[in-house]
Length: 511
Image (cartoon, rainbow, N blue to C red; front, side, top):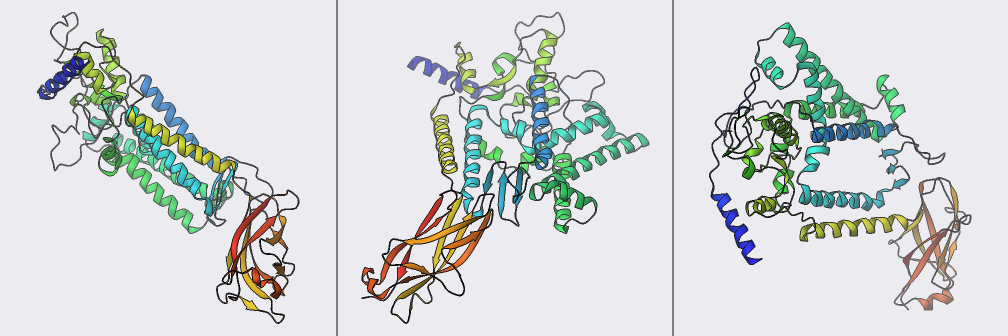
């Protein structure tokens, strides 16, 4: 084992010291535009106008996966506000709704109140840890497949390709002088882009109000002005980020590429070019021998397919979103030239060194960082589940009056005032019975303000605030220690037997 490690280390040091052959210019088919990695660190200057990236359409496993993910995620986003969920006669029936006026978040069978925001916090923590775990295993697959920026950029490029053609046709159209053909194609493309952007902004605001009712009010110009403001805002951002900025968002605006490096190690599966198999690269003619050369024919189809405008053969780069389209492009070329697939593939740095040492590849998913992320994910998920299962639909909170601390009545008894808030999270109204416990002789008293203090009518899915008074007879004041004792307010729903209680203090004169 020590010899194997020393051998691997020596090969790694040798690989670092190797000088990569200069890229002399990619080969391309006749009639196609030259292919360059416009965002390669070897060629991009510090100050220059952006060169538009025009990715080529490729076909293969990962492209199909991206089509499926795009269709599923866009369907979820656009259709979710229209789903219905019956919660009873007193609650909204929209399945997913952020009800700011009612201060509720409805998600199918869940209803989150403002004081239960820890559920949202828990979901965000779960998402973050899950992202860390996935990144440590397989790189930026979130960025390459499910990130909204990637999904909408794919949609906008699809529209662009349908109107203007594939990569070479789009480049020629951009370079050509303005004509009727160029004008109508550009016009239709931007019109469709704007339609998608408006639909995106419109779908977003449907999450904050009843979708069918809001849609009618939007088209009749009776919706609140803020609805139009947010539609305009999201239209602008979707059109700009998805259609115009594209890869610049991932390279310059998103912080995740700067953070992801801390999640990788030598066992992380990343989209990689197998240098040991591909070099030395160069053009290849049919029928000639493959002896003394690598499998890469320098066709640069991996560059043409890359939506980020980089050359994966330059090694792992910050701009790479791990979309794996270069794998599909390269596999197609390998099929045509009769070489094995996988010249570009998901691979690990460790396996690269193992191949150089003549050792078989090794899959190492269980390692310290993945164990830590998995355990943290399980713990947070368990805490969330327990909190959800033990969630109460009846809650009570009490705030004792501080000015005055207590009032001495004419018969010598002591009275304290309390602001009691009762939350009924059920879909039906209830008459809640309130009582006090823990202090012998303490009882609720009736005033002109509170009527019968032991019965409080609370509407469905409502918080009811009432003013209640507790009195302690003069002959029971000896129970107070330094003028204070603990009491409990108990709220009970007689029909269901559900109870909620909270402790507070009762104040009186020091004996």
